[in-house]
Every structure is written in C-alpha cells, then in structure tokens.
Length: 167
Ligand code: FES
Image (cartoon, rainbow, N blue to C red; front, side, top):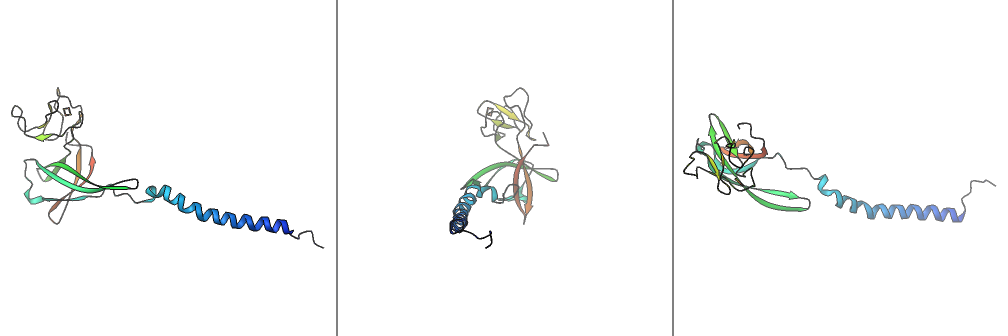
C-alpha cells in the first residue's frame, strides 16, 4: 500500500482550509477595495474649469471672474465656487487668486483710494501691485498666487493654482 494516501482527517483539513480561504477572500476583497477606493480614482487636478468670461472682453483692467468645480475629498464630492482677478498683460492673460497671503482675507482691485491701481486687503491694509507682488512694508510676505489659464471656444478656462512668476 502506498504511503501517499490522504487520510480522512487530512482531506477534511485541506477542504475546509481551501473553502475557508476562498470565502475569506470573497469577504475581504470588497472591504479592501472600499478602503482604498479614493486612491484608485483618477485625479481631476490640473484639469481646466470653464468660466463664463469671454476672452475678447478681457482688458487691462482686472475683473473678478467666478467659477465653480467639483471637489472630491475622499468619498465626499462638493461643489466649490472660487474667484480669480483676471486681466490682459500684452498678449497674455493673467489670473490671480484673491486670497491674501497674510491671513487669507480677500483682496479687491483698486478699492483703496490712497493707493490706486493696486490690490488691497481691507483686513490689515495689505497691498499688492497689479502683478500680484506684495508691497513691502504691508503685512503680506508673499505675492498672490496665479492660476493656469487657457481658452476654449472664446471663453476663459482656469486651471490649478501656480506660483506667480510675474511678481
Ligand atoms: S489678511 Fe490680508 S492683510 Fe491681513
């Protein structure tokens, strides 16, 4: 008689281990997939957002352009509205973030009568030149961020925030 015969006890062990492992994998795989799902999603960062601003209407005078996009935070998706100050500089379009680099208030264009043609933050008197460069001696320590810009069918598209290379 061969010594390779499987005893009834061994057969039961192999069978139960196999079936148990198969069932455990069937239960665990969806849980693991659910846990890491956001990491598997393709990111929309770097995508451009359509605005209602016609490129032909942009002048050298900064105008406020509102735009909305979907923001995905783990499993939660929300609609976010943002703003940019947009103007033409030569042949290029400049889009600056309105978020003050001091403590995050919102800057406005040309709203300080004592310092015309600058961005002004009313919270603590922060000022920026038209390029977004912070005026020395005022609270902000860095320039306003810029947005990537593009154009589609005559309308302005705004991309992700980038370092301001004008300031
Ligand atoms: S937050 Fe803008 S100057 Fe302080």
